[in-house]
Length: 438
Image 1 (spheres, rainbow, N blue to C red):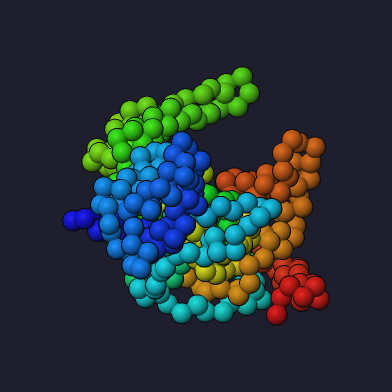
Image 2 (image 1 turned 135 degrees about the horizontal axis):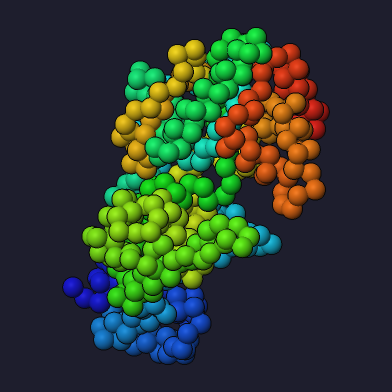
C-alpha cells in the first residue's frame, strides 16, 4: 500500500479531510501537532515534493516526501492520530455550537409508550425521590465526534429502564448494586409505614431524580465508548503507559475532618490495553475499590482536554450520545419524567442482567408527569423543613436537602394531598407566564 493509501486507510477522520490538509498543510500541521517542533515551512516543502504536479494536485510525485508529511500530520505530540482531527476547541465563553451534537444513534425499540400521569390521581400515596443518571436505554450509539465506533454501544440504563417492555412484564423498576438496592427497599418499607400511619393508601410513588454532571461515568457505557475510541487511535505504548500511570496514581479522599485520608485504590490496575485491565473495568477484581469507581477514574483521565485532543473527540459529544433525549440539559434535582409505584406488597430484589448493576428492584411503571420540575415543587412541606435544618451549615443547602431526601432511612416521603397538587399546578402556571412552558 502506498503512503497515500495508508493515510486514507488508517483513520476515517483523516480520510474525510485529507484534501483539506493537502490544500493547507501549514495550518494542518499546526493543528495536528498542537504547536510542537515541526515548522509550517517544512510542511510546505514536503507538500511541494509530495505533490509536484500542479496540473494534478492529488498525484503523488514523491512517496517518501508524502510519508514524511503524513507522519507530521498523524504523528502528533503523543505519537498517534488523528490528533485534533475531530476534536473541536470550545469554551464557555466561546462555545462551538456543534460540540455536543456530533454523534449518531438510533433506537432499537423495546420500550413502552410513555403514559401521561396526573398528579391528582396519585393523591393518598406518598412520594419519595430516587437519584438516577440521565442515560438512555435501547439506543444504539454508532459514532461519537464523527468517529465511527468499532463496535456500537447499546445503552442500557436511565429512567427508561422501567419503560422497557420486558421489565414491565417482570415488574422490574430499576437496578443498582446490592447494598444500594437494599437501602432503596428499606426506604420503601419505611415510607409505606409512614403513609399508612398518616391515613394514606399504602402506595409509594418513586420519582427518579436527575443527578449531577458526570453521574453517568459510573456506568459501563462511557467506558465502552472510550475503549472503542482508544482502540481506533492505535495508541503508542508511551501514551498507554501515561494513561495507566494516571489511573494507578488517581487519588480518592475518604472520611471527613481529622479522619480524612487520601488513598490510591487503583494502584493494582493492570493496564488499559491489557485483557486483565479491561476486565477490571467491569469487575473491579484486585482493586481497592469497585469497578464503578475505577470506571469513573478512567473516564476522568481520558476526558482531560489533552486526551480528548489526542483521541480526536469531545466529551460533550460522548455525554450527549448516551443521554436520554427527554433529559438533555435538565439540571440536577429535577423530577417528573418518570413515575414508578410500589403497592402494599412492597419492594423485592432480584438478580439483574444489567451490565452495570447486580440487583434489580421491583415496581410498576406508571408513566410521566410530562414535565421536569424541581424536586421542591412536589415536596412543599418536607423540602423547606429540611432546608431549615441545614441553615447555617457550610455548603449548598439545596444539595444537602437533596442528599437527605435521597439517603435518609425515614422521614423523607411526602403524602400527596391537595397542597402538593396545588403547588405543582401553581409552578406550571408560573412557568407559562414566564414563557418557559408551552
